[in-house]
Picture 1: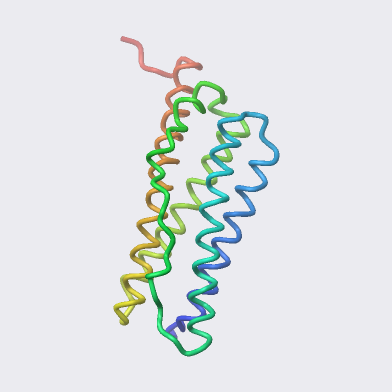
Picture 2: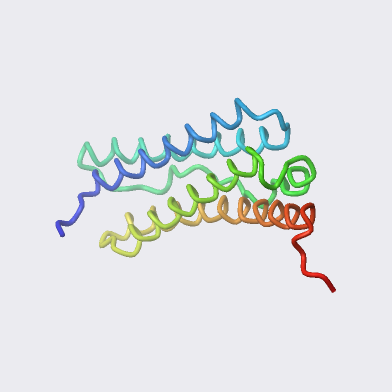
Length: 166
């Protein structure tokens, strides 16, 4: 298999981020559940930061310059956004919002995997650092969404009496 160029990898990353932003924006615009809207507005904001940063890297590489992580925006600590309790209280575990959260979880898994794979195969130390930081950022989103998804799953089990009898 031919080695992918740094530019091609960035194109893939940008496409991934644009697709995530589109999904998250759509959910934010269509949900009637305020905590879910806030969650997806937060995710849209995060994707915008990723897109802006990756676009800057793309421009640098297009000019023959190296990667730089000095202009990487601060990653929002997703853990500080305690969406889980509010969402689990207001959302059906099998409804639209729960499905959207599950889809977002898969998107973040794919993004974390993509960046981790790029970091693992990068030869250049700047490139490795860049993709490692992006993987960490996506993993923070993944962790937050996994917590929410788990709360929704437990709520669905409880609501539908799927728990084992004592």
